[in-house]
Length: 360
Image (cartoon, rainbow, N blue to C red; front, side):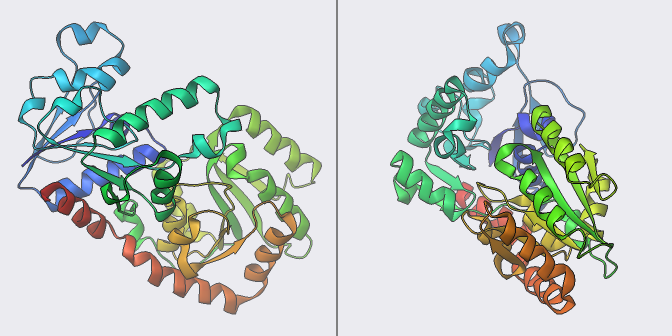
């Protein structure tokens, strides 16, 4: 088969959607090398994926137009497109005009956060996201939802035919599969974006509540995002007298992230809304127990390897922190249960499920 991917984020995005795209493409190409893969990319990159792929870049008049326009409308006009057997849009959208193409059309929907947390998104962004997703789910032959929560949101919020939706869980980079150690350092870890939805301020508040009862532990916050939210984080650290106990690591490299996960004693991820939660499975593969939210789909990612709390309650979050930090038996039970649960998210399973869709 000849399989095309919307690969812009795989080449140029270093956060969640980029990680999803890179992991998926890498594992599909590695496990199914007999097919030919076309990676549609808005600008050239030296990222490599193996021998049986090629980048498809804008040509002709599209080179002088905004690259976003080529991605949303020009891809289907490329000479390579008519020979595709499958085209998979990896992040919420399919190019306009694809409804006229003969290839199988597949789109991955990660979440509908913009419809559930409308206050976090400007009106024009919400209108744009909704227009793209509505077109994509209408013309797609198959829709990949990354969690049961996303599947239900598609049905309830957009009226999508449930028969078109298949849940295919995400995986993470295979380096995490052996990223384990019995040696844990005395710190709690958060990895992710610095923005209100991620609830990082409540992590700091809860840690401030337990700082005297758990004096040997530190808190590491790794990520980046909103500079305004980051300032709020730093101000709260100062007013909570935590300057010597909390470290912020901005945009850590992959090797640094692996080390942080591997040595963390506890991973804390009380997000207010997620489509799935790759950081949770990265932590569990690293044999690091998790505290997460009870009101999202994060229990699908964490299984029995996490304690789930009301993310709006600082008291419950601090209680959960103390429970893990002060009770080694609880810590070890969560590690064992989480490592067993997370094996279902091995990239081999994800690749096999997707290839089944491609061949269907």
